[in-house]
Length: 88
Length: 139
Image 1 (cartoon, rainbow over the protein chains, first blue to last red):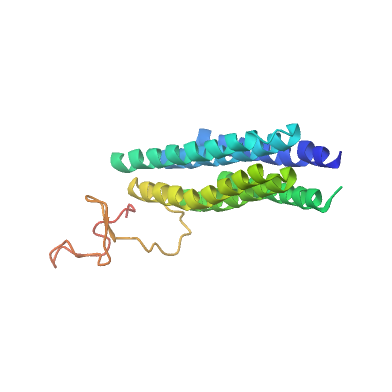
Image 2: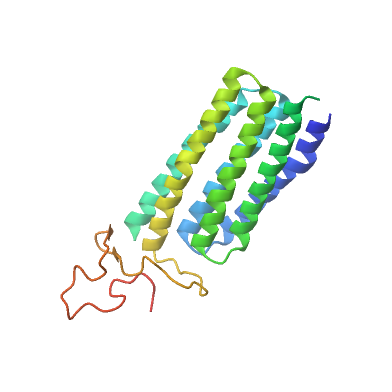
């Protein structure tokens, strides 16, 4: 089926390249807020990967997992920002 | 193959390409604020497109409404998180790119109380007030 081919060979590789780029930025970022931004970006890419996986395996339940990941990553980012701001 | 599947394929590819561009911008841009603009705006739009594609693909009321609620949540929280991190990075003394032309916040933040002030010299006596007196950038 053409949708599965597209998801396996176009969409998922693009998302994985995004994860690799943000992981390189996470490793070599000079400052703490840069690393927090890279982590936030990786969690948004994780939302995309989970949704693509839900379509590939035809399980609509995984969309809920993406929604929960969005909630948790927002809380984590705001908490990291509060700590960085208090530190300075 | 129905029209909904075709539209959702287009949205999947578009969203994945936008998220790839966001990762590329995060890797290549020179400055933390420029990187943050790439990472928040493009990745939020890409995740929204992918969730919309899944909503069109599954095509039943429960899953579609949950996917659209997730899109609204992403659009709501993305700017808030970006603003918090940008503010923290500005106080943390992150360097701007050397090609930056103007910094509108320069001198407007009180670094001790973390308050924003429209007058850059409000807290200082007249003789102490000079350009960039509570400057975040190193001179």
